[in-house]
Image (tube, rainbow, N blue to C red; front, side):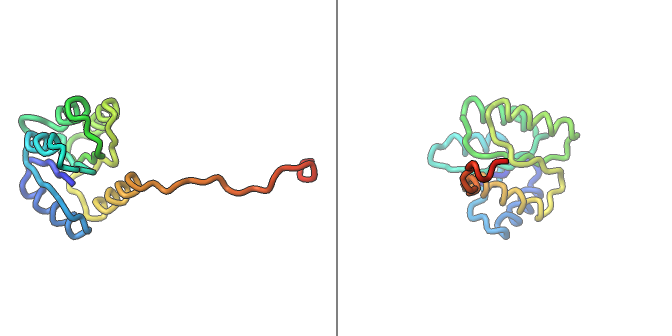
Length: 145
């Protein structure tokens, strides 16, 4: 799991929340460049990247563009931001246009309950429950009227 945010305090608190929730490996980074370096390593598996939208140098939208074009990121995204709702929704639309999966859009400050909900969504995304058709009796002339 990767968390990209330019606020070190947010990174420290969110990393602690995730570890308390049972996440084994959390990679906190303060710059999108660090995230790109991690994600470009084929040996590094990242199932979920939490990403702030408003960051210096490379913002969340540019990071999304690179994830969708250069890196072809296979994991899921969850945006975390104090930005205006319109900008946050733009990030979702932009991500989906690049074929990226967005699990959630979280306003700052993020609560532990919100993180748990995203982790559950990730688990469902990675391990979908097969859907089977309900068993119904065969339709015969005796059941039709």
